[in-house]
Length: 58
Image (cartoon, rainbow, N blue to C red; front, side, top):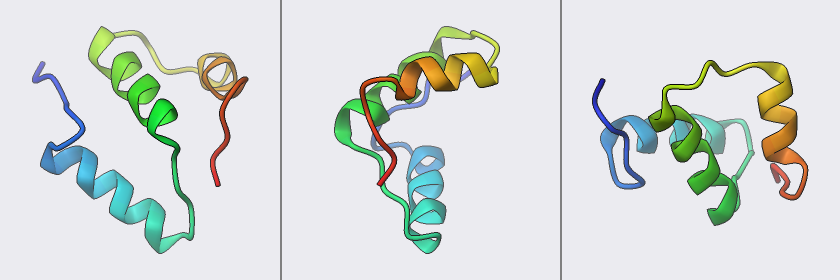
């Protein structure tokens, strides 16, 4: 699978969609999201809650 980066079109598309919903991710949460996606782990509600433990979606 292709590795996604902060400047990739796929990630920019996600951020743009979030902006349309008036949501923003902090830089640290953006990096956590990329790390999770690029690790190949299965994204579960528990994994999302763990990632959000110290950061917020604004």
